[in-house]
Length: 111
Image (cartoon, rainbow, N blue to C red; front, side, top):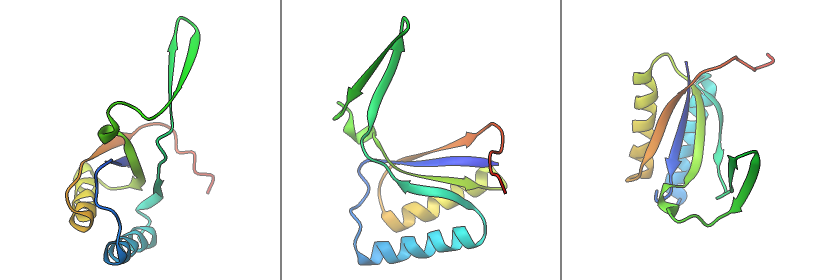
């Protein structure tokens, strides 16, 4: 099962200790084949479609605290395993909010 785990704005700014602990977690997840992709996200653009017209709006957006600032795409055996990985992430970064969403669709990995 694939899950998209996202973190909302407001998590702690990284310091050397946080970076080392996060690096160790990421390294473990890569080694065990759980982590498929991860990264930080820029504020980005808002795209909407209405009546055949596309509107693109550049940020900042009114609810910046709800902006997604990072993601991890993982392969887990269950929702519980995804939740446990999220628990480990927040144990490192401290207070914050995130989302876990199961990803459905074809496996596009060419391997």
